[in-house]
Length: 109
Image (cartoon, rainbow, N blue to C red):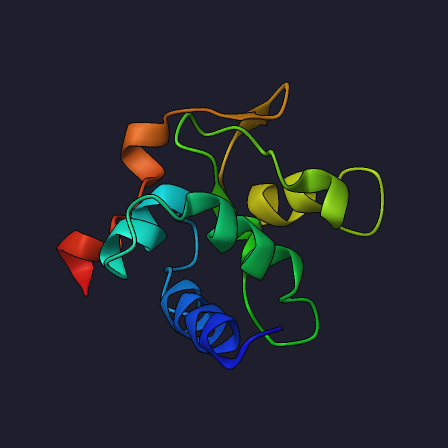
């Protein structure tokens, strides 16, 4: 990978590490915060590569609250289990009450 990509990934990880326990954000919100609003897919790639880096990737979902990255976690429902252990309700891969648990880095950082 190009060094610029790694730098962007590191920035994504720094934002993701600040998502509070029991809250979620979206790929697009992280991208927008980093000044790359059209790069939500790259944020997803960063989350896929975050395993072993102490990044709470389970707290990053799509803009509708869907667990679109769940197949990148070990185990059948690990992403959902991690979210539920933080008090977030998930039904059919969809976060319930998204407006109450949503954390926007542009507002909080």
